[in-house]
View (spheres, rainbow, N blue to C red):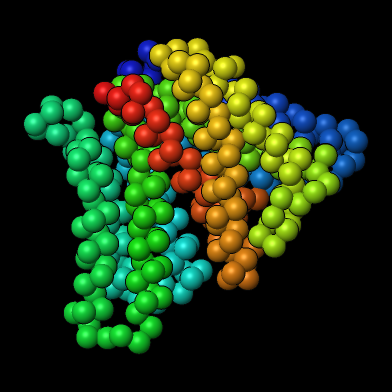
Length: 315
């Protein structure tokens, strides 16, 4: 991955054109609805402004190369964990929070540095082993403090925080080292977000039966099944962007995005409902916090990663 490679990659250029076209089309649609039909599109306009902020940042990071891509997603993981720590109260324990921060940074570092033995980018063995060392460090903290009261909660939150933001999301970070990095990264980013939009849109239009009423009352079975159908069709539509994937892979990728994306959203909704909050933050206009935007991606990334690595390797 590099600026020269990006400009020479038809896959990168295709997704850039696709994103630009969708932004332009959505902007024109909102303008027609607002000024042509007098509709109230304030909420949609806020979400649109959020995309106008996110997509250029993401595109520039990936365009500039592997190093900036890894750095960018590592920063996203750090700020996503910060939202989680603030919402759950873990942020008050600076030693635990700092240890998780260091663990997330370590994920970025082992993804970034070269493997001198294998002569390739990224230290895959260390990446896979890193949770053992980080969790071991977290478990030592109460012992060093000689404390027991209230330690189970901070231990659990710290371990969940690292595994969720550092290691699970780290699989997306590590994909920047793959031979088909543009194919994998850009497809995942596009497919997961489209899955979220499809579930929301079809749920609004057709939704009658709640999917999980106590967790996310607005999500419906109709929206979930429609999103799954979209996710299953998308790998075939975009097969040209990863022609090395076989029929088996296309089916698995569709299932992972269609089911995993919605489970990731629901998993964070469980936490938010338990905390009694609607959003994890307000960093992105119209979208809530960073975690509200990447929750599905966190769940999908490791599942996708290990499917493509098992059948096709990464390098």
